[in-house]
Image (tube, rainbow, N blue to C red):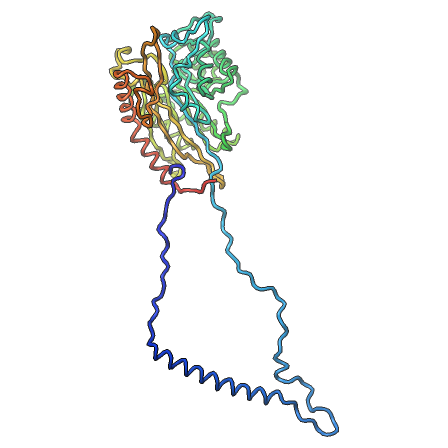
Length: 481
């Protein structure tokens, strides 16, 4: 139920017995009779008292024949000193109240093709990509924790690599500074391009992210670092873990994107699964969840790189893995990799029917050069669409933690020219903005494309989003703190 929305209940009806009307003459008659009876009783009682209070006759020469108290004396009772009885009430349980709220937002792939990299150059080898996010920055900053999938490496230029896009991505470090500047807090680093620049890019990417003051999950620099993080957000401990698929069936080797295998001492430094090995994925994720619970996690979020590129619907393997995660107790699943948005679903655990999992199968692209006409086998503009997926965990005074709210803000990348320079604007397609053309600085042609993008996204996620919201609205209300 939305914040401040109250459920009202009809007032309870109090039933009163009907009173019979009496005849006035009949009433007077009985009053007179009652008065007469009262006078007779009073007179008779006085006579009896006077007789009983007469002292006994004394016999001559001796004391009274009886030393016992009279009847009236024996009936006298001393005033009570006991405290008056106090009215008691039955103790009641204190009301359950909201004690914490943690909002997390996640967006799609930051897929830095070279046409996206070049416009970020501001001089002297310095790159600034902050303008790409200027329209969506205020939405990102609203979250307690904002997350982006960095689908590139940061190998720098000192390791024999040049800046490059597909198929082996290597982006300037400025992308991380820009992500931080616009409000992102956590970077996902497990995806099929994580090892595009070998060991150099694998480790340096993590180093640059850390030096910028951001956290990351999916990869780690050494074996003694956990595969996950547990963050306390407004008093709620949220466990988060990130996985990506691998392409080498050899259990002793890990390959990403069909490239060279990771070195032997590196294969344990990235969370991976084989697409057709749901059992292995379930085992590994189960161990991570057990460890997160041991570290105090009260809610679990899984970020996962899976599925088939450019497919508008999840496949059977995604569904099987999502159900396995639900059965393990994951609360929210956020998927990526297909470069298009895929549906939202509400899953029910087969182990505990009371447990539900919210799953967004794919967030699409946050920014990329995957435009309509750029990919020969993609005939729609879905690769231009993204989503800012937000969900909130609530904690209550009885210790319960649950998903409280889910929102999906459609995004569209407007690629255009400004002062002779290509510009990539990530636009929030927010229906609360009355005039998109003015607020988002759109031409008439771009406005039409933005409206089409919104319709495409809602056609994919709208039904599932309403199902999730209806379920959340059906949960019992609680008092606010």
